[in-house]
Image (cartoon, rainbow, N blue to C red; front, side, top):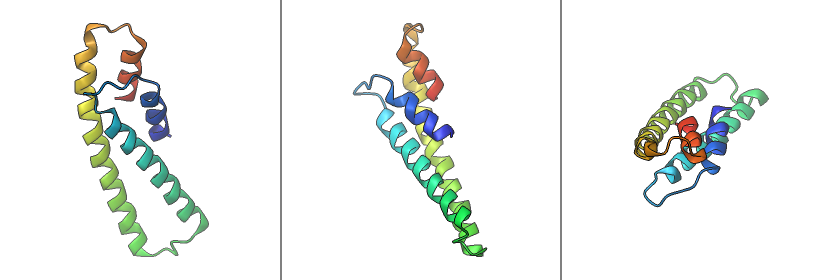
Length: 98
């Protein structure tokens, strides 16, 4: 749910050429889609209670954590650079996305 929210918030903002929102968008869309795939796999019982699937789930969530951290830090830096005009809609959307 939060991945989809980040996706929507970042898609609503103006993309500056120096802004890392392309990476943020990739991470949020990738994690949103992959989490939905995991949900379907586990809801359908396709995993068969195999320990390999549990390990893959652990690895995926570790990768998602690193991806979200690597996306939020640069976005927070760029958002802080735009702090000179904190009343703009884009600034508020960027703060929400971070």
